[in-house]
Length: 149
Image (cartoon, rainbow, N blue to C red; front, side):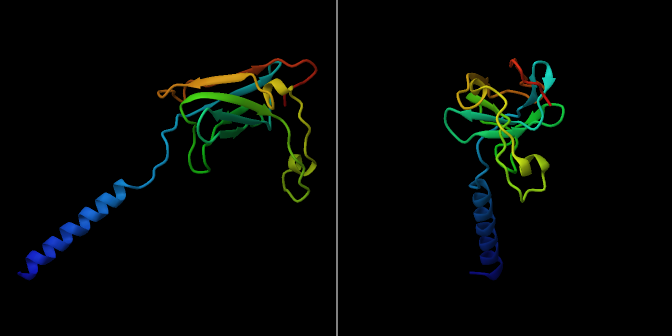
């Protein structure tokens, strides 16, 4: 066998192995982008956790900012949520951690929302496969005696 032919076959084999390995890589599940706003009695709810729990698979979590806006993260690197039916929990509870640099976490915070929005949630959302980021999922909560922010 000539050297050029053997080298050509080895190169072809190495390219084929590289292509197969790249195609076998785990990309993760298909996700849909989810963002929106949470308000309580018309006021933005800041520093709250928004959790989408699918029927099957891992949940996606977001935190509301000062304006009540959130964006879900599936993992640290992947934004969005699995398509399908989700239970949604919204919570203001924060466990205290005196070592944290965040003043809210240092002191902790009691839950200010009724259990129907978190531990015994009645909120459900269906996320279609083609859900787009420009269709926000807003939650306008009505709670007696509780203000946003």
